[in-house]
Each structure stands twice: as structure tokens, then as C-alpha cells.
Amino acid sequence: MDSLCIQNVFNTIRETPLWVWGILAYLIIIGIKATRERIVYLPQLFIIPLIFIGLKYKSFFTGYHSLIIIAIIALLIGCGLGYVLGLKTKVAIIKEKLSVQIPGTYTTLILFLVYFAIQYAFGYLCATVAILPFTLLATKSIIDSLFSGYFLGRALAYTQKFFS
Image 1: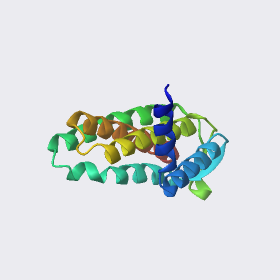
Image 2: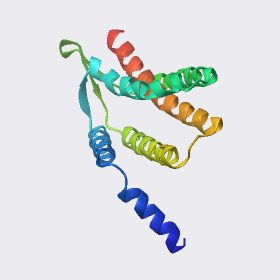
Image 3: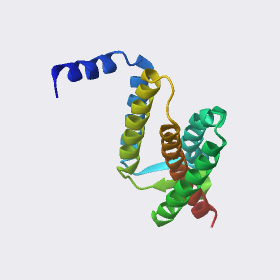
Image 4: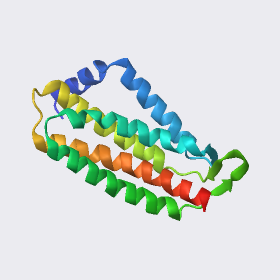
């Protein structure tokens, strides 16, 4: 790597808004908590998927109807994957607290860090490129929807376990 490239990386990091680093810190804290066994109130399982889905609202206003279709298909695939993996996870049901006890795993932390890195890269592209090509918009839509779907599917699987 030459010094100009390294300087560009440092400039990008330095010019990143402070709130972005706050989000990273929050994702790390939540991810670290997920590495330990924990009791989660059933409705709380849907907070992360709803936030991720809410972040996708821009896809619906791009003017590309095909992005909406791509997003829905990727959401369903991610949901299916999260659901299947969620069904394989052994959770304890705590009926009196409307909660489930979930074993600790590093998966959530890793997924959050990967998601943040991808969003950071796309944020950089959006800030430096006037118009993103459709393929990049579609790629971002697929990635966002897969992550949203995964967490939604997992929440649905845990909810099904609770009620069955």
C-alpha cells in the first residue's frame, strides 16, 4: 500500500461522523451480550429485525421496482435461513416471563460486525460516487434483506418454540 492510499483511509475514518462510531459501539455491546446465555423477553426478539427492515426503507424510493422484488426475495431467503437455524437452537421456555433463554453464541457479534463493515463501505460509496450503479444498489439491497430476514427468521423460530 502506498502512502497516498493509507492517507485516504485515515481521512475517511477521521471524517466519519461521530454517530457512526456510536452505532458500532452499540452493535459491539449487543454482540458481546449475545455471546453469553441470556433470557430475552419474546417481543424483544423482534427489535433488531424491525430496525434492520426499517433501514431498508430507502430501497422502496429508488424508482427501481425490481429492487423491491429483489429485497423481498432476499428477505424471504434470509428469513428461511434464520428460521431453520433458530429451530436447531436449543432454547429454554420461560412461560411466566413470556421469555426464552438463549444460549450464548458469537454469531450475532460476527454478523453485526460484518453488517457494519458492509454498511460503512456502502456509506463511503454513496458519499463519494454521484450515482451508484444498479448492480451496487441491488447488492446492498440483497445484503440488507438477508441480514434482516435472518434475524426475523430466528425470532420467528424462537417464538414458535415458545408457543408449541
